[in-house]
Every structure is written in C-alpha cells, then in structure tokens.
Image (cartoon, rainbow, N blue to C red; front, side):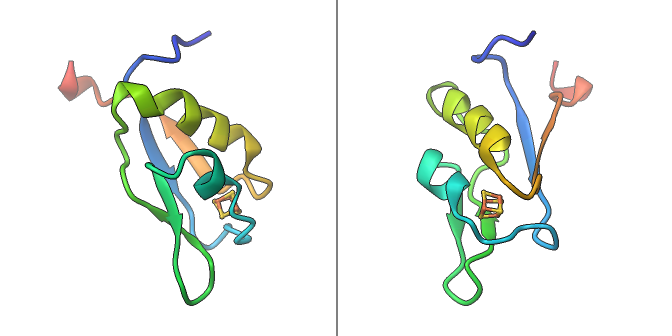
Length: 77
Ligand code: SF4
C-alpha cells in the first residue's frame, strides 16, 4: 500500500494510448491530449502533492494501461 501523498513518477506510452481521455479528465494538471490524435501528453511526470491522488486515479482508470507509475528514483532520496 502506498501513501497517496508519496512522491511518484509517471510515464506514458503513447503507442498504447487509445485517446480515451480519462487521464486528462481525471487529472488535468498532469495529463493532456494532443490536438491531432487525442493521444496523451504527460504535462508533469512528477506531480506536486495536491495532484498525486488524481494522477494515481488516472493510472487505474486508463483503459489502455498506457500510464505507468514508477517508484521515485532512489537518487532523489
Ligand atoms: S486514459 Fe489512457 S488511453 Fe485515455 S488518453 Fe489517457 S493514456 Fe490514453
């Protein structure tokens, strides 16, 4: 179990993204979609604490599994 306020690092895979937009709706400060194809754009791979719960929710909601959650780099500690 992780604390929702723990630092997190995000990655997105635009090859997997289906353009469903759940991420941008759920966490608009962290994700957007491009105008051409509607594919995900990661605005902030290391969201501030207030945006982390929504970002984590977006990971779970993405129907394509295109958003990955990494543990913070150990070099950050
Ligand atoms: S929710 Fe997933 S499939 Fe939908 S736009 Fe975001 S990354 Fe792409």
